[in-house]
Image 1 (cartoon, rainbow, N blue to C red):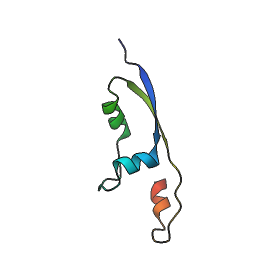
Image 2 (image 1 turned 45 degrees about the horizontal axis):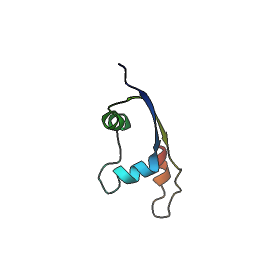
Image 3 (image 1 turned 30 degrees about the vertical axis):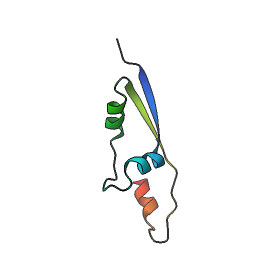
Amino acid sequence: MPKPTVIVYVDGFNLYRWALVGTPYKWLDLEALFSHTLQEFEVIQIKYFTARIQPKPHEKSQHIRQNI
């Protein structure tokens, strides 16, 4: 019997704050994360959304790193 399919919608800002802030890591393999946590489903698509950040006076290149 095939697994039910799922499309995952990600709030990037909150995921980053939940999973990466305070760690040395800046990247997260979303496909691996959801394949592991949603094992009873077939993840067919991941849609990632985030808010654009504004450069701060002390870190003027922050928005450039976000674009990358």
